[in-house]
Image 1 (cartoon, rainbow, N blue to C red):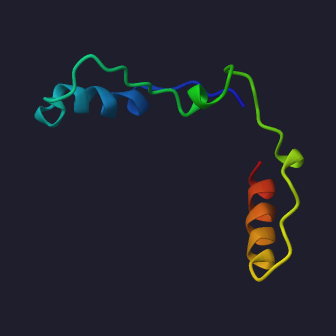
Image 2: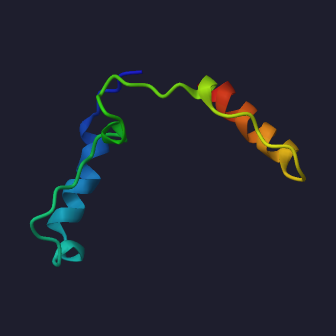
Image 3: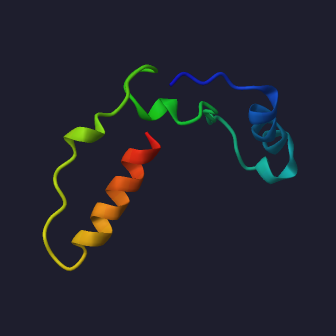
Length: 74
């Protein structure tokens, strides 16, 4: 999924940096990239099917439900 941002997605960060709330911020880079910098490249998508199987135990049903919900959203 490739996302192109619009001004409304970047302007809150710009407004924050221009506000008094950012007065102690200097020499820092604020990435507004919808999380793309979390990956090695812009196009890399994690392989969720390679995740380990949920361990057996008291939380196994909750873990399976979380995994199924994540898979359905991808």
